[in-house]
Amino acid sequence: MTILVTGGAGFIGSNFVLDWLRGSDEPVVNLDALTYAGNLENLASLDGDARHVFVRGDIGDRALVDTLLAEHRPRAVVHFAAESHVDRSIHGPGEFIRTNVNGTYTLLEAARGFWSTLPEAVRAQFRFHHVSTDEVYGSLAPDAPAFTETHPFEPNSPYSASKAASDHLVRAWHHTYGLPVLTTNCSNNYGPFHFPEKLIPLLIVNALAGKPLPVYGDGRQVRDWLYVGDHCSAIRTVLERGRPGETYNVGGWNEKPNIEIVHTVCALLDELRPDPAGPHARLITHVKDRPGHDRRYAIDARKIERELGWRPAETFETGIRKTVAWYLDHADWVARVQSGAYRDWLQRHYGETA
Ligand code: NAD
Ligand code: DAU
Picture 1 (cartoon, helix red, strand yellow):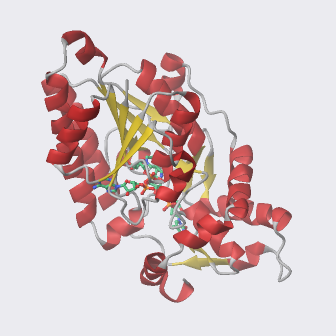
Picture 2 (cartoon, helix red, strand yellow):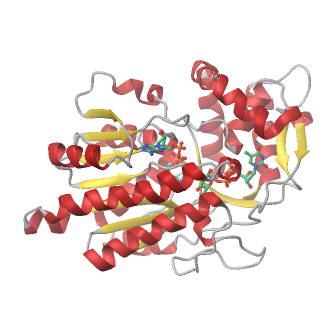
């Protein structure tokens, strides 16, 4: 038995592949285009491990996906590959449509073609697991109940609109063709191998360099934070026991305003790596808000707990401490991901404050 993972060199995908092979000998075929966000160094501990087959390629390449399915005959596809950064989707939405919408369509069609040729008993066991986001549900008022799986889709950014479109395609491939799909809609992840364009790793990396900590607008936007290892365990659980055609919300029960996250990271760094120049919070800089910035996300994760018995293992306090410690212990990884292309992005997006 084998699984095909897409986007397994990115942040969550690489954590998933590492976790999977820590707990199982079932091989993983990892299809990843290695965009700016893909990093094989995340998987360096698997060098020489025959259970991990890495293939550099695009999910939109139908011939390649067909060949991989025919050759490896996976029992499941776990689909992480995406353009994932909201700010980049505002600067350039085209890639988000190409990968998240067209790429998911191509993958679904390839999976359907493969699945339809399987013997009856194997067909029933096949799964297409689509990894999606809470952002498809849009923004919540401060006192509104958290998103359930039946909340209407109201995506507000090019990123979330492209993910919502992909969720709709996945749903339709189940209803129309019977493809056994599973969808998880997860809140904000954080943890090891998180590319420092996203809030938490950007804060850590900038603080260590004595650079400004950019807070969009008033910093009162609320996100629900989940340690990446918990997201991986949720996906494993849904893949194993989820009901085909169902969607499951995944969250950490950790709603926090951004400004609180910033202060928590500063306080941890003050404790673990004090800066002789003064408390890290001195670097907090309020900058122009993100256009169309969603005010609040909150996940109601009761369905996955009730039906499948999954709950996060980490609290925010344990997860963020592990995360800051990981970045302090992996200065080489941090230095290498801050390549020229990364610096160009900072300059383009943050300008003077980069
Ligand atoms: P990421 O940007 O870190 O990684 C994406 C990976 O996909 C990279 O390795 C990249 O090379 C690869 N990729 C991009 N385009 C590709 C293509 N056309 N063909 C093949 N590979 C391609 O993303 P992430 O944060 O790890 O997110 C993974 C998935 O989880 C995404 O689908 C995202 O929407 C979803 N998600 C992310 C979060 C989060 O907080 N990061 C939360 C919920 C859901
Ligand atoms: O909710 C799940 C989503 O979480 C995933 O689907 C996305 O792939 C992932 O990128 C993440 O999206 P966000 O936009 O919430 O994450 P980001 O880290 O970019 O920003 C988190 C919050 O912090 C958001 O309110 C914007 C704010 N922010 C972000 C950056 C990069 C800042 O205030 N300053 C910054 O410099």
